[in-house]
Length: 266
Image (cartoon, rainbow, N blue to C red; front, side):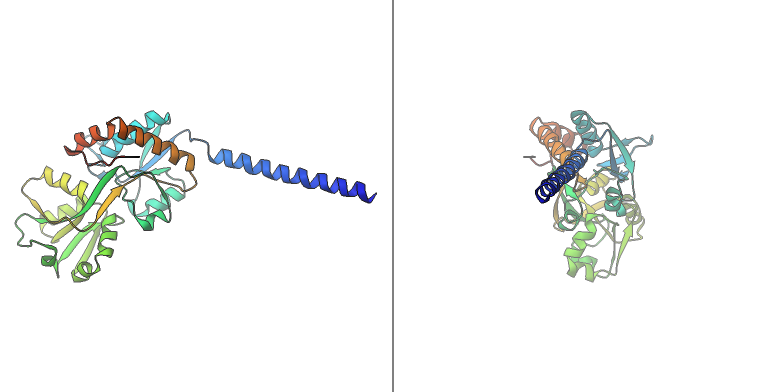
């Protein structure tokens, strides 16, 4: 009887392990399934990456890029405006599936989310009014500088502690457009802004602003995803590489920036 019990116990153990392994395999397969739709979170007032035109329609470099990626992935996309200051929370809570709107790759963010391969260069600019006597960052000592809350400009300030501590105040706005409006009205003395946004906004209002420092930080843009969405990340990286190889990235960059500021996706 003892040997029969031993055989029975062994059989049950093997069956149990097989069942557990099978469940784990199914769960993993389900987790790696491509979604039926991709919801992209964005700040819809971040020109020229993603913004609304006068008719209220979404457009921009990243909008065009995401639409093209959607076609190549064979998965439809939905664009969902979110509070950019809470973008990581929106991603982790599955309100959105991607963050695609001039998202700077930073070490701190990389601890929480996964990034696609970088596809564009960016920098941080200090901008003042054209008629301002201020000519460099030292001239902003004791002054008020505005920037967008939750943006990589905040990270750039934190890295440039001496400059940050010299300021009277860092005024945070919901978006860069609001910061530029206050700069134009003389309510603040300068704006620390992403290069792509700053130069686009300045081009729209020639002669009103000037860049006094373009060395506040060099950056790159990538798409943000949840760390567990590895299949989607791999597929997206493949599509970005294809668009880099066939010139699509360059074409879109020329459309929105009149120059190619993209990087080669390997």
